[in-house]
Image (cartoon, rainbow, N blue to C red; front, side, top):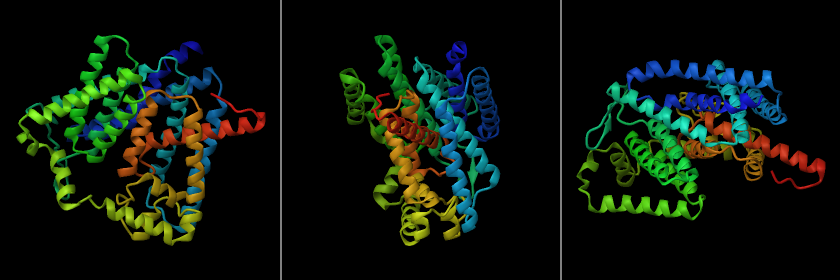
Length: 399
């Protein structure tokens, strides 16, 4: 069993790669290949899951986690059936259920890991491989400034930016920063700092506005929780960036998609319908007592406004409130914070989960934000277990 645990980081990395690879699609070739790779990576993650349980025993925490998501998904389905509000297909629904369950399991595995740097290292190598593939297929051109060539077309024409690309390389940047925090040698720190800036640059090129801002928030969170050394490194990084933008010729900014997209906000206050969807979701929640107290089920927002499935609220908290109601969602959030504060850390996965939740608050949906809800439900079930044990023993636990 000990030998299996030593290699479980590979299962964690397979799951993480499977849930993020689709975000990196930047060309027709990647749209064809990445779904196949995702299926293979998920299969590998399932193999690790099976071996772990065949050679060991099911943990109580995993059973509680399973019970939690079975309850939430079953309740959501029942309410959906009563309301007749679903805009999601049954296969997609069960796919999301299974992926989130496996995600919870791998969060628990990561919390047991003694060496928590392995997952971050694996994710960096995976990001480098994906970047090499995108470069070979011509999806990214290393000119000045570098840029993505999205040979993907939608009804409005050719795609010019991809928020998923920003998110994928944002996680790679957080991996580098996590290893920078954990490193002792100067050479290794320098290498991780260089990788961090490279991945931040590529994330910027993806054009995701919120993803970049949330990457900054998550990076500052890691930096200011790593002691004086981390703070000094963070200040040096900020100084270097400020110096570059002060003295460099900034004419190239006009060629950056991210710059043009931020200008749209500042000049036209155009949030790409997110402000409208947000306002409509709030109106539905406050004006429908059934949705407020009991939830209206999966896809209630789209059904109410007669929108297609892709016009969801673009905010996982609002969609959770509409799906399960305020009381159940509030209870899950409370349990999540109890588990997060008092439970074991899952290492780098915590930072990835935190970042994914932030991104999900801007553009995520309830069944597609796999990493975010794996993070939330793992710590919610952990919080529930801690409260039950504390009540049973009458002694405050410090785990």
